[in-house]
Length: 135
Length: 135
Length: 135
Length: 135
Image 1 (cartoon, chains in turn yellow, purple, cyan, green):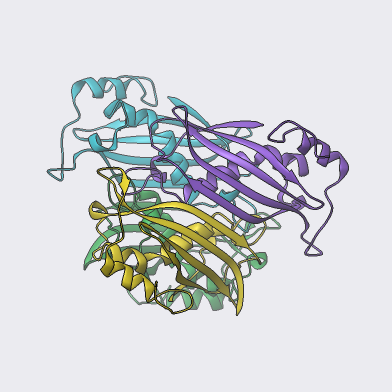
Image 2: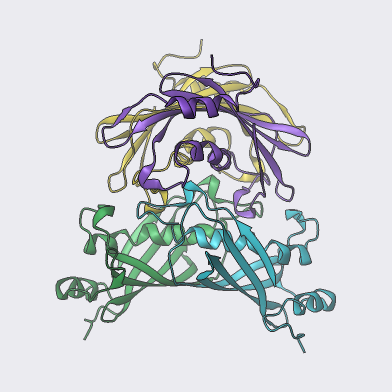
């Protein structure tokens, strides 16, 4: 599991006084950065090889400005060319949001998916939710 | 069904040359505005009575800068206090993204959900995917 | 002068109940789109040839959600390789924000500025604040 | 002087491959947080008493994804009810952006400015550019 601390920005609040719901996918993408680094170690966008296929997000409690949040990121399932990332946002010891993102290993030139290399697959497996390997 | 045209912003692109995936929930929220007006006709945030419980988004094709998109918004299901909004983003006659948002009629003072009033329920029903009523 | 109508988004409000100040540069960039089209008619980012050198923004009144704004954009001064764009945001018949942006005609490959071609210079001049030409 | 480290987000890049210029005011607002805390120690938006009057930003070099930036924030001048915040964004030991923001001590109820209390004035003075006091 990866953990990332994020400081909510004033510009991320909305008129209801909380963090606007559209900010959550931004934080989740930011917290997937260590996953991106498994595929593109130097994070050079010209070598990018991941595309997002689906996100699902459950909003369970309000997120506030003024207190840091922690985003917990783990790998949920690993398929042939795609995998799922499970994420949670915690604030003041309560889980406030849960999300699941499906990412695909992707060739932007050919515009099609490609198998996840074994070496990366093993690294992903080390970050699975239950800590077990992908087998 | 509601239709809204949106002009993609240059600031909404990312280094891969397309619209960044985190922009989609922003466009979807913008396109739910006629739904918001059913609950809060003058859109005054102090009278707001909707909260978002869940979003799920399927990314089916890239979205580009330089051409307008159309967001189609319809009501999918209506429960006692919650309802689902189905949305699609079209660009150049192709559907690029599909989304489903669950909204809850909510009392921010009491911090709990409340039944959708019959009058609003009827209006929501007029915008259901298949055009049929909520019964 | 170019005029563009923008519908404020709920996600652009902040906890003070108004549009957050960081949204203004986003709206201004969006409203410079007709200026971008003078330099890159098809808006293809691979042919982009403008870079921003400076912005200055005066906030004169609050911007609200629920009512459209109009952004007025005109050319203020034209130099050899750079020019200034003057912009105003109006809401309910009051000017709320004034901005001035300095843009440079730029070669991203060579990483240096280049003179504004005469044909574009003439088109820019037609949109100058006082309506007079650049001479 | 205050220093804050920020990790650029992928969603903050644009199609030109760098951080979009509209992100800079967002980072600057985030980095003014210790200044906000001088006026509203618990950062409760219901007690907020600052409003932004003006920003000016000079873009001197490109900002990249993949490497952290440091934002340096200091107080430039202090007037009766307003003060100026000077900010710089550094990446890989080069200053890339300079900004100046004018903030006003403001009564949102009465909708007018109010003098900066002496105690806060002294604290602001301790963070002035040259380290000298406000006198």
